[in-house]
Amino acid sequence: MRKLILSAVAASAALAASVAPAFAADARWTDAQYLRASRCVGLAQSEALGAVDASVLVNALKVQARGRESSITDRGASLRADALRQGKTKDEARKASLLAERADACGTYLAS
Image 1 (cartoon, rainbow, N blue to C red):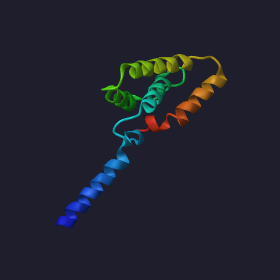
Image 2: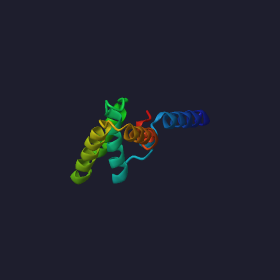
Image 3: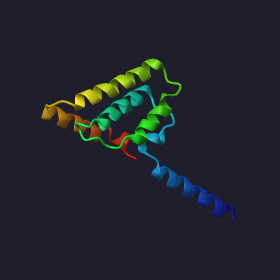
Image 4: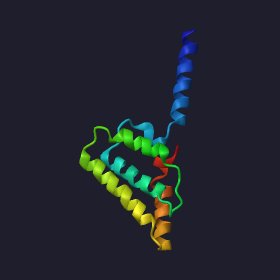
């Protein structure tokens, strides 16, 4: 009976780990990770770049903002606004660069 319970617990833990987004692996992000994720939200929400669903990341940022220094959260908000603004560019090469950044550097954060 004990083996059955332990194997069920192990299977449940493995399933939970495989379903969780990659960025959720660490309970607390570093400031650099928080700032990168903030920029990724801006890139994901940019209508000009073709907005993608970032609701999971937005919620994760809200959780991660708790207890973080206001200078970091303010910088994160600034990076998000900058990314939204940069997404409105008419320069196709710059748009391609931003889309590549969103796909590559932000892929971990936007995976759900």
